[in-house]
Structure formats: C-alpha cells, structure tokens
Length: 541
Image 1 (cartoon, rainbow, N blue to C red):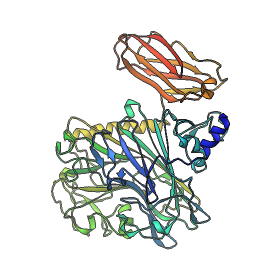
Image 2: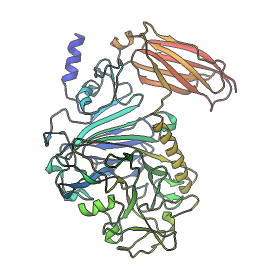
Image 3: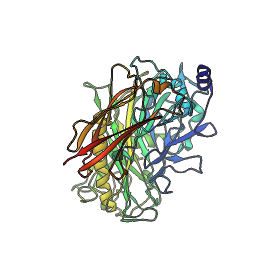
C-alpha cells in the first residue's frame, strides 16, 4: 500500500506557484525577507499583484526595498547583437532547448521545498527528480550519484527553503521590444537553471542566495558576451534614493538620500546585490573570473536620453559594457581632470570619501558631462560581468551566484557600512563552501536514537554535540522526519536553535557557539518524531 501511495504522489502534478498566462511565480520567506521569483527570468517583482515590488523587508511588513531585478545576457551571435533580457517582464519561458528548438511539457514549473516537507505533504519534494537532470540540487545521502526520491533530500542542503526552475529564451514568442531594457531580438538559445535559497541562521536572516547555470544551447557562439544583474531599487519611497558600488566586494547597493524615508522612517536600511561567482572567461589564457566589470546607473524623471530609463537592444548592450546608451563613457569627477570610469559611485557614503552619489551625478551625453547636484532620485542600475574577449561556445555553461541582502544601521549612511559588513560575512560564508554548523558523519547507520554529552563540558564559548538518527525514523509514517536541537536556559527559555532540519538517518555533529551567552548552566534537547532527550551543558567564560 505504501508503494502505491509513493507512485501516486510521484505522478501527480502539483503547482505551488501562482500562474498567469503561463508565467509562474513563487517566493522565499523562511527568514526576514520575502522575495518573489518568476519563470520569465526576473525576481523581486510581484507580477501577479498588479506588477508591484517583490522584495519585502521585514517580511509581512508591507515595506519593500526593490521593485524588480533580473539577469540579462547580450552578445554578438552570428554577426548581430542578440539578448535575453530580464529587467521588468523577462524574455524567458518554462522549458528547455532540444535540438536547437524550444521544448515544454508539464514538468517544467517552479519547484519549492522547505524544511519539514516530504513525500506526504509536498509533491514537489517527491517530483524533484524531474529537474535533477537540469541541475536541481539535492543531498545525495548514500553518495551514489543517483537521485532516489525516498532516500535523498531535495533542495540546497541545510537551507530552510529552496526554489528551482528551468527556463529558456529559445521561443521567439517570448522576445518583445517592450521588455524594458532591450528586448525583441532573435533568441540566444540560453537555457537557464535557476536556484534560489535561504537560511534561518541569525547571521544570514537578511540574505537570499541565487544561482544560475546558463548554457549556450544554440549553434553559434556568444561573442563579446556581456551579462548583467539589473535592479530597480525602490528603497521604501521610490524618488529619494542614491546608488553606489563596492569594487572590492563586487557589490551594488541602494540607500536613502537622507535619514528619513516615507516608508521606512528614520534610519532607513540599505539594499544590495553582490557577485559571489561571476563570469568565467575561458577565451583567455589563463582562464579567469571576470568579477564585476562595471556598475552603471540610469534614471527616470528629467534625465537626458543617454542615461534615461529603458532602451533598445543596442543601448542595452552598451550599458552592460559599462557605457552610457550613446556609447560615451562615464567620468569620475573627483579627479582633475575627470577620469573615464566604468564604475559609478565607488566611494564610501558614510565617510564621503571618493565619488559618492551625494557629490553629484554625471548628467550629460557624449563626452560633455557636468555635475547636476546631489538631489536623490529614482535610480536604476546594472551590475555587470563581461568583456569584449569573452566568448561562450555552444554547449558551454556559465555559473553565476549572487546574494541579495539588506541591513539597517544607525543612519542612512551607516546602513551602507552595515550592509558591507554583512556582505563580507556572506562572501566568507560562500568562499568556505557554505559552512553550516552541522556535519554529517559517514559510517554505519545507527539502529536507535542517541544524544551524546557535549564535548568539552564545561566549555568556553564553543562546544560540539553529536547525535544519531536511526533508519526507522525515515520509514515511519509520521507527517515528517524533522529533527530539532535546541538550547534552553535554567528558566526553560529557548536561547538557540541549532538544528531544525529534515535529516536523513545517520550520525551528526553540531558546533555550538555560545559566545553571546552568559556563563551558567544550560540544557540542550534533541527532538525527532516521538523521540526527545535532554542533557545539561555548562558554559564557563
């Protein structure tokens, strides 16, 4: 009977996303951010609700920091510029490319899994295998390289939520001149495998991660390729913003022009997008990551055409190349004479060193520029990675990873400093291969639950806790096999959640950093289904 249930769940098609005209969207909201992700290629936009902003922080507050974003590709293909644009509506559809043609069937949709999901309560969990050939992530429990629905765990390991979609621009029907920036060219035959995920760890509670595996499925190379992350950041009120970039962190950001925002009030936050992995240029020797090769801003009200919002596909290619829409350069006015630059506003807002938005815009077309002044406005930006010697061969894959993050400090300017500090933590987290405080110990699968005494004990700030989950926990017909490991003080108040995960059977070790707690006696409790055990630990500083 159980096998029949599994087969039934595996075959049904279950859509957790909102659908409109073939476009689907879903969201991540496991931590402090609620952000929307859409099969047309854009994110941070709620297209199902009158095209409204889609990066809400804090979640359920009705306050938004970004209106829309997306990853756009432009290159010379068979002698002419083509692009796969994703700025305001997006030129992607659900599906893949087979034999240089667009292919779609009902398995192409947004898949979403969360902590606590399993084959009984979320068919996406059971149907995850449909997308594994396209790169959908999972924890390979027995390390055999094969996704097994009732053994392996779908999603990014230890994340609280994961979204996955396979989309492509291969259908001419999705290419429209009205996309926003660019749009309307012939398809590039880009197949994009997009994963978005988040964690509930307190240090990452204001961060979402996005990964794209982008494959050239066409018959022509993408020559002189340019990729860019577009953003229309509306930090609360949309007409009082500044922008900037940090060339060391490969980050673009938006902050309020003064210390009061009509939506966020005093001390408004700062919003950022940063490259964790950029384009990898295999056309040069030695091969190299390109990093953020330019940061360009455009504007809305009253701007000259060369820096005005929207543009043709040729103008889009120029913006992705680090130029203005008329192909002229930006200039850094903090030098005498001005110096050409591909990075707008790379200075530090809080110390006001270097060129910041507060010191003025460059507002002219051609090579005639002048500083308009420091009036905050409605700003758009492109954070680009590309080069004139960067070519993507047919069949080649490029992997892009970004983080979108938000931070609030003691002022609008200090919020940028706090954002950069968070960005540095996120970069270290990524560079160290996403180290979560739980480690799986390979070996014989235990036959019973076990919670071991922490070691060392007593301890000074950091200790380790081992526990075991038996095979019987996986096959039980309980609603889920969630494992929680929590720490409590003497009054029974929860002070830390170390584990809240859907874990496979095995032995695990968790690192507990109690640096923020006072010395004293605490208790840690492991709960899994009907099993619960508590032990005492002693913190001595």
